[in-house]
Image 1 (cartoon, rainbow, N blue to C red):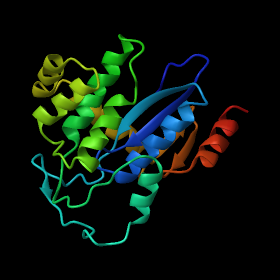
Image 2 (cartoon, rainbow, N blue to C red; image 1 turned 180 degrees about the horizontal axis):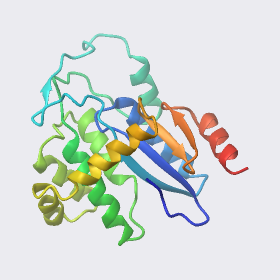
Image 3 (cartoon, one colour; image 1 turned 180 degrees about the vertical axis):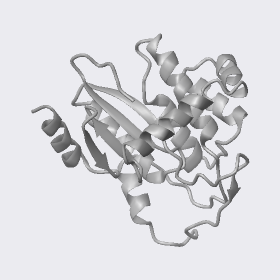
Length: 209
């Protein structure tokens, strides 16, 4: 996987829509992009490949009166609300296919926010507790991100981007990704985990030498 980005630093973000730390990492990248000209591309990852297409039950990890977790506190500092009470885990394959559609659509429509689809999908899952494993939900969120809903629905129903997702998953395995989020700067330096701005700045400085 590569990015054509003359004069810009490329950043490949390997993540899964059901990974809460990936949401945190996206927020950190948004802040980083305010200071640096980055060409961003997403690569898919399945946090739990055993999740069936219809999703699977999940026991809530916290109770309403539990003290805030480290994840919730980090999210709050970045403007993220991690709602409690989730009782299921969605299958994220359709969302990954829609992201491939979004990436292709954005190439022919300059000026679109390249992070919008990811941001809205994360919010739907972690804040609104929606099931992002259904076509209707994915299409609606795609529309909110500025994608043509009818075209997106047709692409998902025909599985047009299924092989691209499989190829992306294979690429992540081939380069040794075993945890997400993973951030690959300039196709040469990988940073694992939702790090803070200082770590990302160090990575950028290193690849620009």
